[in-house]
Image (cartoon, rainbow over all chains, first blue to last red; front, side, top):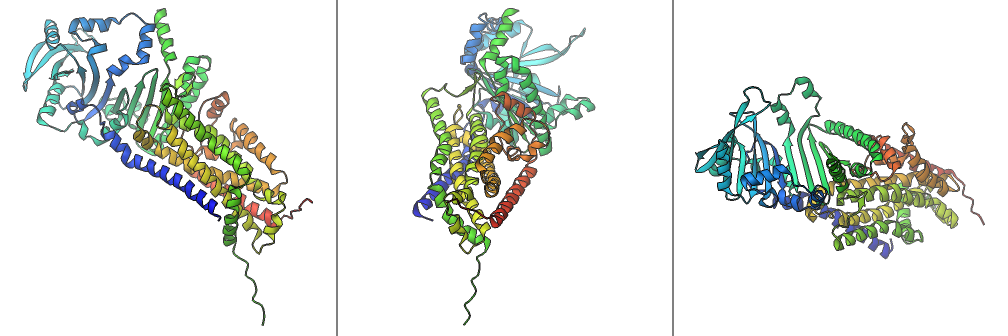
Length: 330
Length: 284
């Protein structure tokens, strides 16, 4: 082998080795380290370890996104609900709420699953409490915190609707929590007594870490939800055997998202991929006459390996133009 | 005193000698310019995209208004440039030329008069082709990976780390693809007089056409088995690709690997037999 051939082989192998080595380091060390630095929002300390669904949204990022601006221009009138909320509580969603964390967890007492929403931002505590009391709520003290408790009707409205106890409290300055009263007490206990919160749930936190850079995300344990939902046996057996799922999105000009599911075994993942591939092909055929939807359908990318199935997508702003156009016609 | 009989070197040892000789020839031939352009093109393209995105953060490529992520863009480059174009083209041009070039240059006589098995000439040249193309294509893929994948907002470490299993699978798949196409076209080059035309028709006529239709014919292509090893979703950039995706059958990974290994083995064996048995007449 002549010298220049030898140099070429060495240079080529060097590029290959450095590249693959860097990738390996990023995979085994860099990736977890990068993720550990942003292991979810700090509100997770109020979320119990057995949370079955956990969701997060950076409200400020959504509000200042190009997509939001575009939707506002397309639909200039302000939503009544948003205005009513501001009148009643003084909370301006656009400016006062920075981020929201929501979760659902199984309860040992009370309803099988109850949920809570934690919103970080700037709130007028006195105004909110006064308003809730006007509507029949009362104040309870729990470990030094004021829980504003209201009984609200739940479920379908029969003659005498069932009522559930809903609480609102300020867990910290600038952090308001809204949810079922039992789970609210549990959240307070978690923070004060230093119990096991969701950050000690490695399985769930691994998913959360992988989603931390996105504007909004949700992760959930589908098998737990399925068992808690008490579905008929026939229906339950027809559902794909998915253990975990996650959905995340980065919102700016459009929505760039990723759906991910972790199945019971490799075979289930292969089957699920085949089913999704079939639906994608069908969607592609159906969308041929609608250019706006074509962009969405063409952005679908199926991936994943082993037990993981992933589907990435990009919802372009044009799709929302369709929605806003339909809304304007109404 | 009787002279000691000369021992004919073994096939593998002879092939290694030919490999050593051919690798340099292959790398520094006129064809290398073509090879350089072919594997340098995606790197230049990736660098240009990177530059555009650095200068204008909203400059990520779009398909019908949908902005692509770095990982999706990398998958598209792998599909459209490497799998559909570079790998078959390299296989056709280099595979068919392994013996044909020696015949054309009238240097095959020098190789065949050496005390080595004729099959070793083809085997050594084939190994040199695999080494040459793998050493050029894989670093090119690695460079494209580092240029493109971190684009799209996520941090360098997380995007590189998250997509590393994909690129590792890509590297393996491309090496297997180069070996498979090279072996098939080495056989074509050893058996036929005008192998290039037939090779091009197979790679860019037969394979894409057959993959469009349902049925068993697609099993007579390399692309059918190779596509099963691709970790990225097939891009839907044209109506043809949509049709291809609808009728796409994906064989399992073990079937693909075994089929491609069988193809390489059989094609090489037949090519070596063809070289052993064929009488090459040099045009004066």
